[in-house]
Length: 212
Image (cartoon, rainbow, N blue to C red; front, side):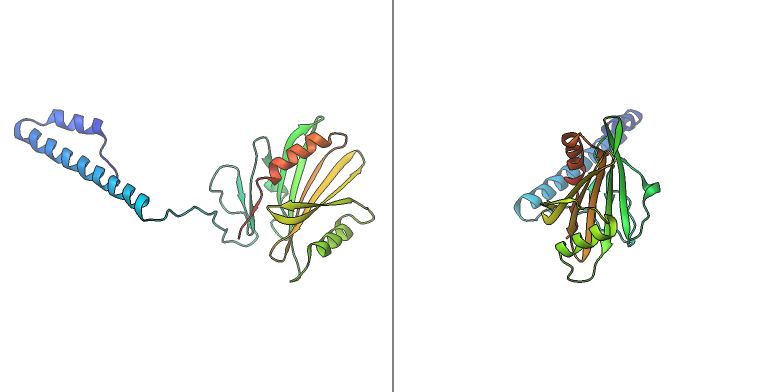
């Protein structure tokens, strides 16, 4: 319910004379008192009985496509969302919108080289384990390489961190399985700057969240 602007009431009252002014004053008072009473009742209802509903991010309705962000920098997809940190730029022109790459970000420069983060999603056969998906991903996307592997988490889900360096570039892949889909959050940055690369990577990963 909208409450009348007091400045507008003053302008109206100045134009009214005699008894019409008195009527206008009474009407304005009743309006303000009624609005105040409604606000008090609603406030008491929340305090003493009603359970406030927590806002949950809506899942997009179009499979495989990003929804219209509900806030600046929020990228939403079928199963997850990411809040794009300051200093990172989304490159939708490089996203294929199908199985595979869902989100591509160009980040701040490290050693005069912009960081790159990509998030890939792959449909999996029901029951595929994390270890099985890691093996499949390495065989398909990193053939002939032997990345270092260590345990990690992605949004509280078990994950594996794969890392390797080649041609002066550090490559990190955070791999997880969720609801029969494989998720890979990958980063590429200049080698020799592990601390800076990792800090920037965490800025993105820490905003990642799955839909329940």
